[in-house]
Amino acid sequence: MIQVCSDSSAVLNAAALADHVAAQGARLLFAIRIGEAVEGTVAAPNVPAAPGVRFIHVRPAEWYLTLAERPDTLDGPGDGPGEGGDADVWGWDLRKVLRLLLRSNPMVWTWLSSPHVLADPAGVGDALRRLAQEGYSRRALGHALWGEARKALTAFLDRGEAMTATKSLKAARALLALRWLEAGGDLPPLPLDALMDQESLPPAVRAEIEAIRTTGIETHPALYHWINAELDTAAERCGALPEGSPDPAAADALYRTLLLPDIALTGAGDPRP
Image (cartoon, rainbow, N blue to C red):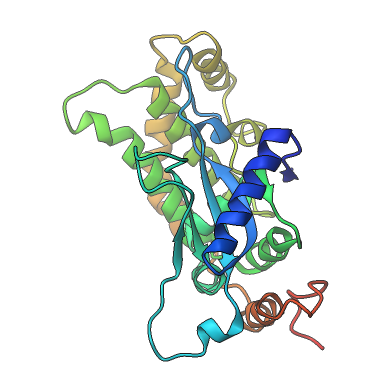
């Protein structure tokens, strides 16, 4: 379930981010937290890295009325990694987000599926999720998840190093999201906990995932073998997933609505008058 964070620190962070975006001549539409803590892919006793923040902004209509290429990314507070502030904070312009959404971009869905919403004052997240759920290419997203799992598995093995428990959790999360896609229905959630309810996950694998996250077991043979078996068939399974594309007319309608704030957001995802 997607919920707006209500604790005081999140509210303060959201307000500070909105002020920062406004100081750059833009308006904050949507902001979420991402990272291993949000995904639930941290092996005990490791301390999760501080979550990053991603956001969507829009500028006044006049900004877009030019032939010149203009920036479509904004940095958050802080001058950069290690230079003060929350360095892992940045966002994309609404037009860029919608263009990528129409191409079923996997990163856009990662943002929209994060359960840690910092700001969504006008329901933009829900409008974008509707567009994605109705038309995203399951095949494109499946191939991205397969690539994520392969990267997690081989990043260490290619250097002759042992597989780590955290990398196993990341690979398992991606492969379970792929299984979710194969089951049909909604696009997959981001957190590992939400993905583990599937019947396709063997009990022994489930038990090792829980043990990695709670007691920090050193070996996890059932999970490791399951990951490899899933990867052996992933390419063929991804190819069988349905193609798709969100509705361009609905995306245009949503873009116009958010570009002109005097138009109500209700029904923005619907191109009908």
